[in-house]
Length: 443
Image 1 (cartoon, rainbow, N blue to C red):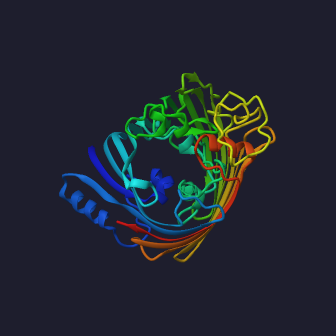
Image 2 (cartoon, one colour; image 1 turned 30 degrees about the vertical axis):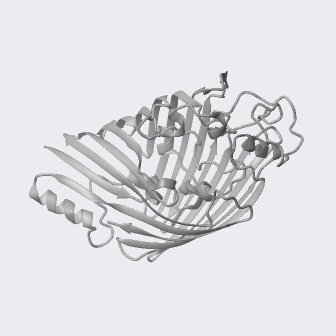
Image 3 (tube, rainbow, N blue to C red; image 1 turned 90 degrees about the horizontal axis):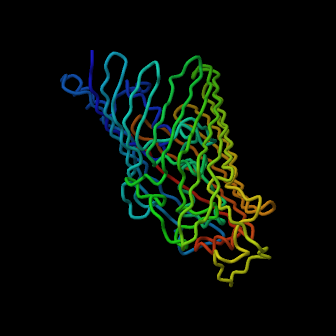
């Protein structure tokens, strides 16, 4: 017997990492009562005309930022309303499914202009035996299978949210993404995710060209002025081609008792330079990996992750002279022989850990993130972030949370000069306290 399914989902940014785990074959009924979307789905299902699910989550956050090194570019207080909109269509027959999925992010307050951004759009084929095959704008296999320390954090999730850098006067790029910095999830690709067999699952993807992201309007889909979009990791206008990403995971145990999961993921491919100022700036190829581990016991969960970005997309052109020290009065240019990277530079390593414990309707969590980016064998930019949060679940509709994040960053003189030449933040040391209160509303 065959059937068709159309799914509309509105999901908050805080649940981005877990969106892929939503069970489209049924609705989670662990808590009593139905959400509005579930009532609609049931009524439409009873009519026999269509199987429709509408629901999701909105994320409202207010935060106060107090940092040592201030900048006119960053606000001291921010309030935002965020959400993801998802459309999914599935036609299934005799154990096989064919459909498409689209996701768009809507932001107000944190991301300027508050415009929606199309995030993923792909066709997929699935079966119990071979898993899922996707074609289009979707995540890489490595992104889908990698594990980082923010897996179980509640609240805004600190560094794992990916937004802290937007209003923190950061230390010359020392804060990097919680997983692979140059994952090309917004580019067209072919991806395969296997079913779980005897605890093992795997994934493999191939990305043709990271510039192929016209639907997303990111900085990689066009070449831009050097001083507008340059970065110490090479050039943001640079791009990758023929990127292969793979992942393997093993899990065992029961969610109600002791359980664990171990995963490894990798990305490798060709780094292509941007053609800027009639100069072909060479960059290193993509070469990165992630190792992650999850352990849980009843109401306790913990996750640990390590990501090495290698030299991915880093400039191959090295400075010919030593900078000698950063001077705020100097107008550094990327053509200066003392500003560029030196031998030994890399795209950064990240260490992350997170723990969470639930009792009753309350969940508390703590996370730690440390990133280290090298500008030479001896020159580094470092960041340390601690995140503490508590979240209270009133019912299936409403959750409230409070969170505190502590950020400390420290950059070398070369990083500060390079960043100033790129017309970006040149602050050396900085620290900040961020206080948040927010709500998550399910429909």
